[in-house]
Image 1 (cartoon, rainbow, N blue to C red):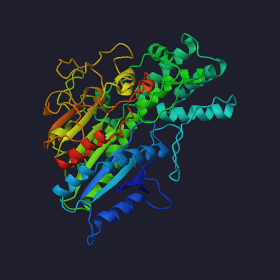
Image 2: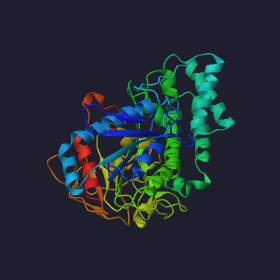
Image 3: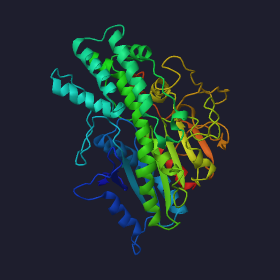
Amino acid sequence: MQEILIETSLTYYLIAFDANGEERKNNGELISQKVLEILSAKKSEKPITDVFLMSHGWQGDIPAAKSQYDKWIAAMAKNRADIEKMKQVRPGFNPLLIGLHWPSKPWGDEDLSAVSPDKTIVSFDTTDNSQEELIEQYAQRIADTETTREALRTIFTAAVEYDVAPDTLPSEVREAYEVLIKEASLSSEGEDADGWSENESLNLDPESVYEATLVEDNEDVSFGIGDSVKSAGDAFLNIPRLLSFWKMKDLARKIGQTSGFNLLNRLQQVTDNTVRFHLMGHSFGCIFVSATVAGTQNNKLIRPVNSLVLIQGALSLWSFCSNVPHRKNIPGYFRSIISDRKVTGPIVTTQSEYDKAVKNAYPMAGTLGIFGGQDIDFDPNSEKTYPGVGGIGCYGIQGDGLEIIDKPKKMLSLQDSYNFEPGKIYNLESSQYIVVPPSLLDLFTGAHNAIDKPEVAHAVWSAALAS
């Protein structure tokens, strides 16, 4: 589907995949086929020079994806000075923008004809049918086993019995949590993971998560667009939501390195070497685009992509290094992107101290625990001791075997030039721009989604310019 943005000169195509990685049709049409036809048109009066592929993060259904892409691309289109620079460097500059959608919201709206985003509130109907439907939905996003369903049944039963969230976690709910965590851990270790579970361990503490849930009335555990936690039922479902987090990380990887990779490979096949490809991801979308570039051990792209930008990435800070600390001396899962030079231009990441999702919720689903981990010191002159688990959106890409450029250390204003160099990594401390009003700085989200800023778009344009 082609989305035309009012008051901008940029349009984009939305290509949507289902949970199995199959492309969804829009009015009987595969949008990828339309994009391929545009790219392969040999006698076009204005041929495409640059292709931008973008991926949203967790908790995004189709309306949310559309809303997010509308905002991102509107921000890019408003940076006229950056576009003029691209025209100077790339005569005849004519970009093609593609928004990639993957179903990362467990009960989201996957109708391509949907227009506006909508937050889904879980209703705890007491009828057996509705409860069983919810149990099935959660089981599909955690672990498809009868043991999982029975544990979920215990949690949903408690959600109906309690009018308000109790001060302490009921013992039967805690035991059900422990069962779910074990089942999710077992189901995440597929043969195709190639060390994924070694990079990202799963060790939730039910009591800590529940206590954190009770801190505020309006928490929002979100790596994209999330749901408010207000009722007792919602409080009990925070652990299943975080397990959905784990499952969605795996889904982003799987669909990225199969369907995303295949799409990008097809796009490269119908274009010559003069057409450049730029990938940008947000949150778990950083896993999606990284997996798209990396492919698998048996599949590699026809040629490298030209730039990679990871905005507030919810993936391990060790993902690209040659030796992951505390993980049996294995390389980061996406190490091949570096070792095989799968990105010829710069790799750029952003960090913000106001991103509570990556700073708090990401470690909650890892080995640090919600309150037990090290905090980051955002003083660029300080010596940092990095934790075993942490997100790129908090710490940037780190580890051995990487050429990380210290300058610029901070995200720049629109008037300043980055002068990025090809093949180098830049971690941009972006707290000055990726920020929201104090009233919106809740425990779990903060400024995680506040990325539709002109300065963020400036970094994306600058990475493409340097490639």
